[in-house]
Image 1 (cartoon, rainbow, N blue to C red):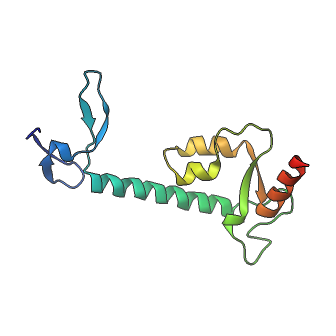
Image 2 (tube, rainbow, N blue to C red):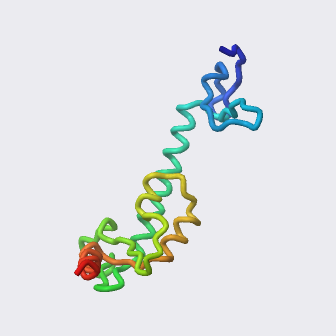
Image 3 (cartoon, rainbow, N blue to C red):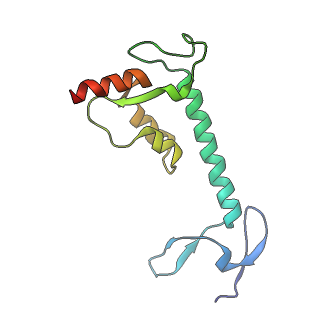
Length: 134
């Protein structure tokens, strides 16, 4: 076990090198270690994940169902959960909801996937898929 001590950039705590999370292996076979301790890294990841969720919710509030017109303007009890992204050309690379919640995707990548979709409320989306089955 290495006794090398390093100072975290984020919280300025000094800890043994093993306390730094491993990121990936270098070409020489040694591990590259992150610049933040695990708690700081997890807090930072959660912050960005929450920022992405907030952006997504605000974005969906500006949309409406392309079939029936369900939107914040037309319904008193509007919910962003009711609007869904339908891949109408069978060109689905990713599920937009998973891209937001499971992380790792840049907003530019998410917007590219959204641009492949039409916006439908949950009812119209189910009806649309029902028509595809029969």
